[in-house]
Image (cartoon, rainbow, N blue to C red; front, side):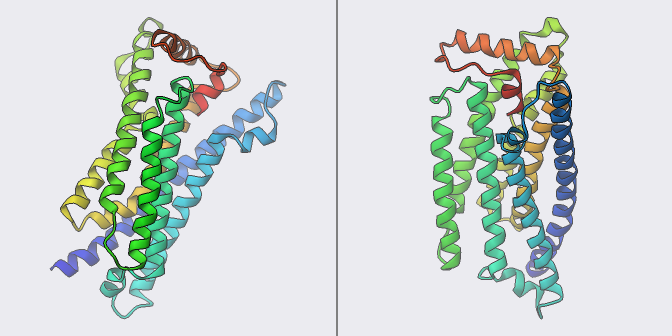
Length: 299
């Protein structure tokens, strides 16, 4: 029964990851369309950036990196499925063999996706807090710890030794909870103070959830709990992690792309930016070079 549930769970991984990757792919294409459309619109008005800024912007680089990592992970998932049931005499033995190079590559891509996701959320925190390095000190240390432990975990898998996957998720939880709390507080405060401009509580909650990547916190806690209990669903959580990270980031970019046109910032965009600037002064955050609306909201 245990063998059957283990094999069935790996089959479920293919189906669930296919669904989430499909949604992620659609959102990625939408975000790409919005970015190109905004670039074309700004060019037609004679106030746009050049092609170098379009493709080498942190947003473009991070979305492309997440897309490549998620796509490669999904390809490996499908490849492993066909190898297990067509190219192997025993699907159960194939999935249980952690020394298989495709298993190592899949795990490595999961870690890479998490590194990128954490780096993106730290960058958002840095920008929203007016480029204050002190605010991002803890998550930066946590990210470095995650990278070190992830490499150690991969090395342990290669040598069939005890891995440090639990420590990995401790670092991930620290980074995501910290960044989500600080980003969420800043956005919540700014939108709460702009109620007179028509901002409503349900919309504010939605904005905080999306722009602070709160989805990642829920998923991180869920995944860490599964690893702590050694549940068979760990395989499912591992397989779905890359597209979940991608979805959280795509929702941020699409939310910004739809809500804040580059060539014509909405009142809400201006209100959010001005209130964030006021908050920076009220908490005595060191002054930094001014950030434009497009820089602050497109991050």
